[in-house]
Image 1 (tube, rainbow, N blue to C red):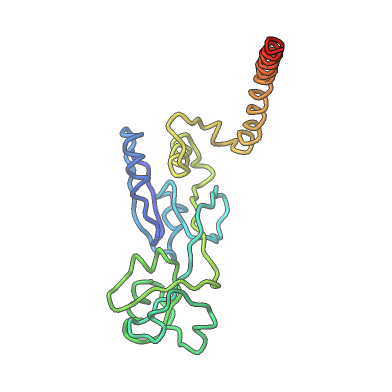
Image 2 (tube, rainbow, N blue to C red; image 1 turned 135 degrees about the vertical axis):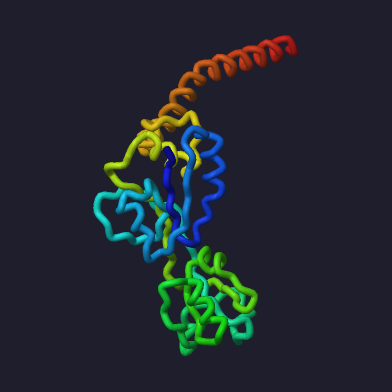
Amino acid sequence: MVLRLRYVAGVSPARWLRVWAERRPDLPLEAARVEQSGQLADLLAGDADVAFVRLPVAAEGLHEIPLWEEVAVAVLPKDHPLAEAESLTLADLEGDPLAPEQPDAAMAVELVAAGAGHVLLPHGVARLHHRRDVVAIPVTDAPTTRIALVWRVERDDDDIQEFVAVVRGRTARSSRGEAARPEASARTEPSARRDRSTRREPNARRRAAARGGRSARKRGRGR
């Protein structure tokens, strides 16, 4: 038996694979990269158990946990007049042709290198398809994209929840109940701190009173 993971181009799951291998050697994790155009295909067909996808996704019956945002970058030929800029805005790119849209990001980058125009890509995707003859420059006012972890509602079980815990950085001792009630845990934590503070207050008052008594005795001996 294996846990089957799919991840969209631009996601680097290596750190979670390492943690999972240490935590669950009894359940190997099978990971495969997919293109964004087919990011849900295996999941919906039952050939994958969990997937990192790029939002939005138009599918019913999925649990979804939004994770991180991706900055958009402009991929330009290395000899482009803007190639030395540290960052760009959309206004900087006005009048500069867009490369013809492609279903495959690698092909889009290849067209940029051939001088067919520029393309806007999530930073992780541009990094994955980096070439020496192109540059990728952040576009500060371009819409960001977001990566999410998704799985089928009917596939939800302890193994999936444990993988969710790994992705969210929880330790092996974290229970599924804690994972399912993050808001409740956050609400009770300040109360616990207040309870500890309340227990310390009587001791603090006794120590203050004792210090005050010693000071008074010293002043009496001085007279």
